[in-house]
Length: 102
Image 1 (cartoon, rainbow, N blue to C red):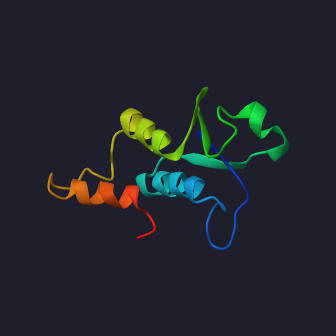
Image 2 (cartoon, rainbow, N blue to C red):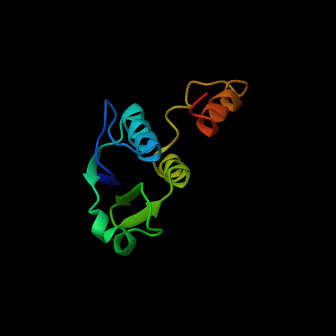
C-alpha cells in the first residue's frame, strides 16, 4: 500500500496542505490503495527528500512534490482519469491541474 505523508487534516479535507490534498484526492479518484500518514514535523527535514510535503513511499520508492508524484503514479499504474477523454478534452483537464483554484 502506498503511504502518503502529509500534515494534519483540516476542515473537510484530508490535509491542510493543498498539495497533499491534491495527491490524496488523485489517489481516491483513481482507486489506488493508500494510507495517509501524519508526518512528524520534528523529523521532516531528515525524513523527506526536500524537507517538504507531500511525500509518498511506494514499496521503498520515496518521492516528493505533488506534480512529480502524480506523474509517477500515472506512469506506474496508468492514467485512469484520462482513459475516457478524447485527445481534444485532455488539454482542458491538464489546465485544471495546473490551476486548481480557478
